[in-house]
Length: 296
Image (cartoon, rainbow, N blue to C red; front, side):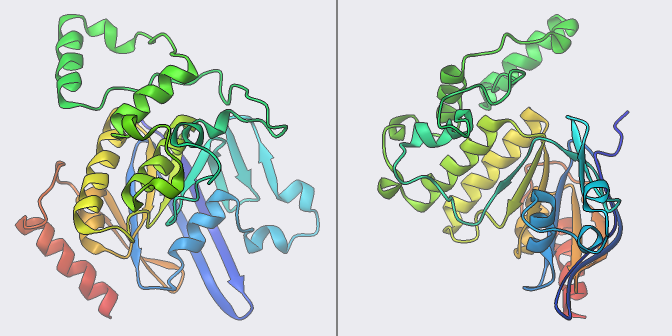
């Protein structure tokens, strides 16, 4: 049975007299896809920045003993005072902008997490999992194999080399032919796929996505949404996905949090199978409910 992966309790962040985040209690389950929607300035991005360690909660800043009350780690998870508990040690953000290294090729950007602080190549994680083939044909083959030999589902796959893992990711993200190109030679959609590939290569347990597709055209955005859904189902990641697009949240998430003035105003499960159609009557009903909440 799944247990809670991450718990927030009395999490608060203020800037002067403005409260950006003020969450009494929130639990995130492992292998869940949670979308966070709300008006601009409601605290969505600040919440992700707190979880990414890019901002410090007020709980930590206001205590006298910074060492005892701030960041403690077990090697597997991180506790930030009492307000953020169970944060996976391997947590990675995907930003609105790709933020690629302009002097590195597509392949080198994806493998960037192998670089140590001294610039030398090293294994970022000795326990990396194999990158699954996300194609429908591969999925069918996997299902057939597991039906023929149920025990195979629990058998460890031999770990591929970093080069092989990168090759697989390039293939799955449709970037193989672009592997030697530099960021200046990429379209917006390609650059965002490279950013996603860099995150997947790092193999985080929790992925924080901050409106990653907001600057892309409709067709590119839909293609990347499909890719994210496939990786979510195949790699069993936990995803927190911030978006201002209610339709996008309904197409992707199995849970939607509506934020207002730093608070969680509504917590709505989406009990519909994926892939989903935006014209689905249930989705349209939920969309109107969310829009009504945001309009109040």
